[in-house]
Every structure is written in C-alpha cells, then in structure tokens.
Image 1 (cartoon, helix red, strand yellow):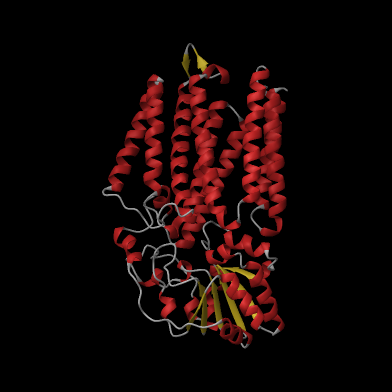
Image 2: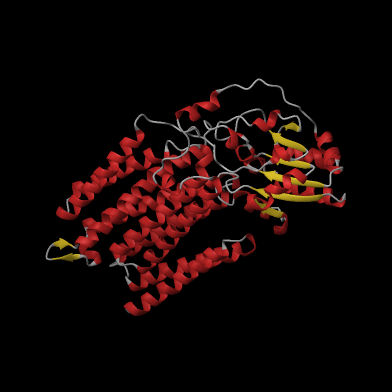
Length: 466
C-alpha cells in the first residue's frame, strides 16, 4: 500500500472519529456514534497492518496475539461491568493508554531504526522531544488514573489526602522533569529516559491524591485528555497519522469537556490541570464529624400521597440510584404520576454520579423521554415553584454548604436548589455523608422528609402505594 493511500485512509478514519464524537454528544445518536468510532478504529488498524506489515511469521503472531488478548479482555470486561462501575472502568482504561504511550516511547528509543528516526547513528532531536513528552504525559496519566480508579472503586478514601508542602513538591518535580527532558534531548541517555518516566509516575500520583471525591468527575475527564495528548505525542515520533488524529481529538475534546465542567462547578481550569483543587486540609477533615440532629422520617405511603397530590415534581437522580439500579422503577413511578396529572421533570447536575453523563445514560436506559431531562442551568429556577423535589441517591450536588461554608471542599460548586421546593423527599440508605465527606444541611430542614433504604426498594414501594 502506497504512503498516499495510507494517509487517505487515516484521514477517513479521522473523519469517522469526528463523527463518533458528534454522535456521542447526545443520547439519541450515541449508538450511531459508537458504530462510527468502531469502524474508524478498525480501518486505522487494518491500514497500519497492511501499510507496515510485521516482518516475519513470528511478528505477525505477536501482533495478532496482542490484538486477541486486548480485544478479548476488553469485550469481556465491557459486557460484564455494571453501569455503577463505569467511571472506574474508564479510569482504568485511561491508565492503560498512558502505559501504552510509555511502552511505545521506550520501544522507539531502543529500536529507532524501525521507525526511520535515526541519522548518522543519532536520533533526531525533535523525535527525542516527542518521545520524552509522550512518555512523561503517559506516565502521569497512568499513575493518576490508577489513583482515580482506587478512589472511585472505594479502595482508597474519596477524601482529599493532603501532603505537607505538596505544591512545593509538585513544582520541584515539574522543574526536575523539564531539566531531565532537556538533558535527554542532548545525550539520548536511556537512564535519563527512565528517570523521566519514574519522575512522571510519581508526579501523576501526587497530582491526583489531594483531589476529593466531589471533583472526581472532572479528574476522569482531564485524565482522558492527558491520555489523548500522550498518544498524539507518540504518534508524531512514529509518524503515524492515525495516532496523531485520534490522540488530538481525544486530548482536545477531553480538555474542552473539562473546561465546561469546571465552569459548571465554579472551579479554575488551570488548577485542574495542575491537580491543585479539591479543598484544603481543614475541609478534608470536615467529613469526620458525627451528626446527631434529628430528621423527619417518612414512609413510601407518605411519599406516594404527597406526590400524587402535587402539581409539579422535579426528580434529582444521583449515584445512589445507579448503585440500586432504580432507574426502571423510577420511570414506572413517573408514568403513574403522569396519569394522575402531575407534571414531572428530571434535573441533572453536571457532575451527578461519578463521571460526565452518568445519569443521562441511566435515564436513557430506562427510556425516559429526552425532553423531560434538564441540565442544572435550565431547571434550577423552577424549584421554588415545585411542590416536590424527589432526590434519589444524590447528595453533594444538592448540598447548600457549597454556597455557605467556605471551609467545605465543595464550596463554590453550583448545586441544585432542592431546598427551595415546598417538600423535599430524600432517599438515602442512611445518614452517612456524601462522596465528598460533607454532611448535607437539607436533611435537617423542616420541609424535608427522609426515606431511608435501598433506592429501588423504596421506589418500588412508592409504586405499589400509587
């Protein structure tokens, strides 16, 4: 296959990736977007294999074995993973992309003649820079994603873990990394390359450890962006147009999504990139206080009666709904309320759940009409006119501390103003604090009724009473 034909096919694959991103931007076209992405990736892989075929039977066996193991494992994991575990799965996959970038850079360093970057016994300076940058970003992505996975999966505390002088340490590591990259470009030392990787591994972990659970959706989005830039950097070194296009698309789209989410959460985009957000040590300790104030507790019968006699109900889904897989029961409850003439809408916070779009996907899975689902800025003004705010498993995104408590790790984050509704029905398993480790003041308001229990079982009981 000629170089021109390969370039043309890579461009076609790139167009398919762009169409995939466009399709994934809305639930109604997401399946089609996924299909475009799969076709584009298959085309890119085939073009690479045909345009640059492995030398010899042994090399072909290794390539096919790698594709089989990776593709097979990915298919099995994707089929088995529940929606509640999707955020940590995404974080885990990001770590693999980062590690692949490190491995690609190392392979290129040890066999530069294979990709044509060797001249007079020395690797091109620009290739050394691309190699070092791709490896550094990939290593940061790897350890950062591993920490994000551990926090999302409950294997590490979701609270911010503050190290003494962390900013000074990170700045020192950053400066050392720049110096090592400059040295590596000058002498092509393999030892310096591995020092760059080791330093980047350390920096990646230190950037993510101090970030609290409330900010974790932005972390997932930002790590997605990092993994894209790492792939693009290695793409330049390898001279592979598909890697450059794909990496740039992932990197830029992840960065744009992170910027949008930062605006929605009133966070600084620069501080996100540097890992310097998520509260301070005082805030991190705030979740250790034990709450003893009494709350008003109700039953499914009470909730059914209140909503049946309401005119307007706004439903606020959260991670608790995802854990209980209550979206189908919720849809059944809403259908019954509509038959009683109740107007029902869904309010989605930008970071509800553990990753962007988590709640939208769950509601789409239950065939909730898209025109009933509203984002925070479009529906927040309607809570004062609502008879009922029905909160199912959401916590931090409804917590007024974000507006009033400057010591809180969620301070400054826009929230859904559920407390302004005439009645707040709040489903929770117990009185535990949210993922950010902060007590929710709404629990103790006079207009709030707590419905304790598994979200699906509580909603099923409401359905029976309706």
